[in-house]
Length: 354
Image (cartoon, rainbow, N blue to C red; front, side):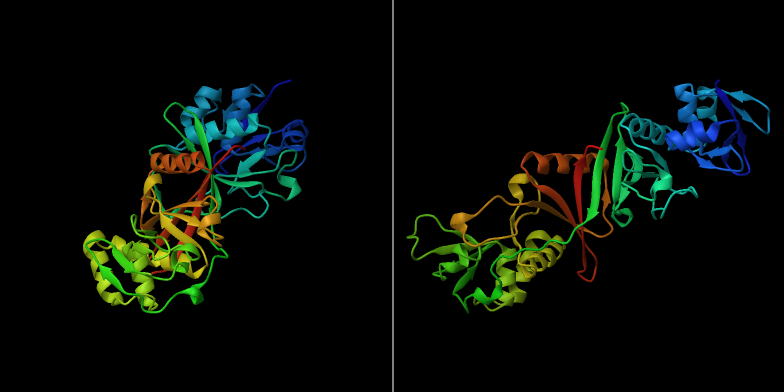
């Protein structure tokens, strides 16, 4: 027997009686129990049951109208109902139980702009465990950096395809050679957009991976080209004989205010014993190496890193491009968000297959 629901407008839920508790909640994780065998369904859950034919109709208390799936979906307010329904139905088809995150039956409900709590396969809301906190957006919905949170971001494109991204706070760290190995006062010249260091110790490149040897000179007497970021960092620590402020000023002339943000990130990574090198070939600010013992035994870089101000707004299309590129070269995409005082929040974004 197919059941009917009753829309309780005051509570914003669909009530279903008869054996609904056993049929929908206990065995399949829909809704939450009320008195007796009655359950309350969130509108998105009721819509899914209507779509599947498990509910025959929802009766509107106010008008008495019997609503099928088409009529019920059409009356639901808010531009997100359509994309939320698509994601809800997709995850149900993959074997997950999930509930709207704001509903009272969700254990430890996630905070923020989260749409659903997704439970581990084989478990439901009564088991007290959440697999994902899930946020749903359309492909044209921008994401302010301030809205990033530890959650899965489901992006629905204009053809109703869904891409899932695992968004998580990141704490970059490494074990590369610390600043104690730096030389003292190497002779250097500041050029238009880089620095040349004359006859530095070989370890500056070989062990701590600063700069790039200038081709055409004997390798046992290296001449290194440094980026302005590397030069500013080394000048601040007295490793080269240039005034740090002069190098920073040149960086600002070349890059504008972006230079200060990138230098803050470069410095923080070096202080965490991570080696950042240019990410230009990958369309990023940096690629990073966590464990550099020597350039001769250098492994693959692990992260691609983009630097943004903390008020940056992400477009889902750009996120998809960055993440796909990083995945294609076996790296993880990380965004460094720099505030006005130089503080940095780190966020990694990776493709996820639920």
